[in-house]
Length: 269
Image 1 (cartoon, rainbow, N blue to C red):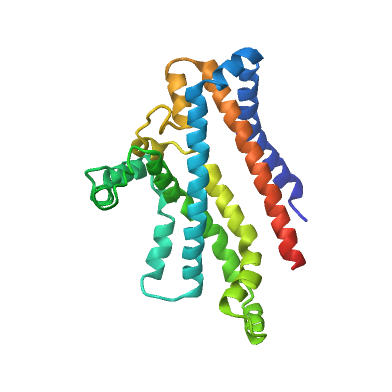
Image 2: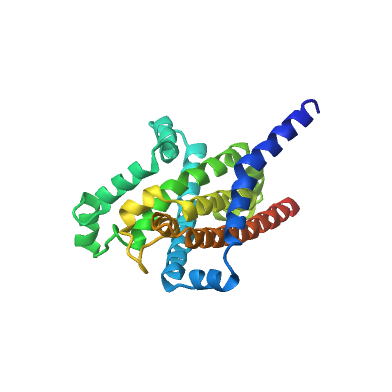
């Protein structure tokens, strides 16, 4: 195929300059710490709590975003209605909106004096802003577009004759969905969820305004890294960042293996 060598060269240059050099710098900076110092930093209870908050809220938010993102993609592909183009454009709003602006808006709406925050507090006793629940809400907001834009093309290219064949054989709509539709779109759905999870783990701007940033309760890892840098504790910031990088890499590797298994299974079916 013509253009292979220039394209490969550009890809390798991009990979080295944008990805490998920054990550290798992080690793080399971490090597300045001995293992005992590194372990002392990472096993600090406040840091462990921030890791738990970041990964747990990101996981919950990605699952919720996967469910509602799939529903939105299904509606956009399968139905025609007035305002469809407007809804389709609004889905991409979190991509274009600065995350800090999104955080301020969400904090204003869901704080105890905000109209949604007051309603939830008065009717259900649920406090959203300045709690881990607020972090989940912010991460759902930024994660749903990843799911919608990943699942939507697969639904558009899905062969509806398979549904018709299943229906002609007497399968109900629920059976058709579970046995025919869902297995074919599951790899794309899993990809969207993993993208939402990866974005959520490293998210900063949209979270800090609604989280409250309380140590051991709603403090996220990116904020803790920024705090370490502001205190000129470069060793601590590097150790936390490297640990987060390793954990994220392992989780994404497991997700990719799960995606590969799902594709092979759907191909066999």
